[in-house]
Length: 238
Image (cartoon, rainbow, N blue to C red; front, side):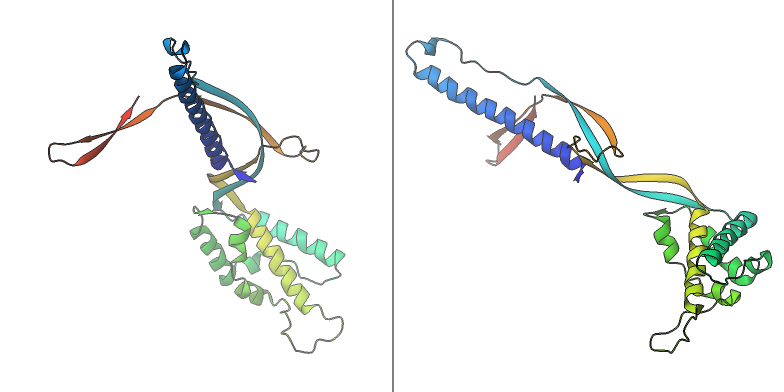
């Protein structure tokens, strides 16, 4: 996996090295002409790349970006999504999680949570899931009186699901909170690519065709001594 910027930097360096080798070869040939009895009367050949055009197929392997989210509470939607997940858990994992009610999410603990979420939006973050994981849901779970996880070393009766119910309810609320954030902006940091596009397992990857055109320019560094006797270097762009 390579950064697109690193790959373009590599291509640039390789083309410059190619131009350098061509110039070195021109100098070698010019010296041979100068020493030859007959060739010294001819101009030594020199060829330059005035421009280079490349069409390169690339495979995008990863995108590093920051996203700006907005959280807006829709009570009916929030309740529906949480309770739908709870019903699935109770059915598949044989739990007895209570369904969330409108009265419960209107309590101070939930109101404070939603206010905090709305105050923290409009910031660039790597992942909304990672940001949601940082939220302390203890006050909300305590208000719901969901079974709390058992501390290490404490005896738990066989078949007790208190810890499981607590963790599952926390997971459900966290996931629904994450789903209720909408993207309002994206800032791209890095684009990672793979120049190898012939792999058999690449059908699901995103492919792009990179068109690169490089025009030849040159610089010279001239050294001279000024009136005060100081050596000065001057860069001259051609």
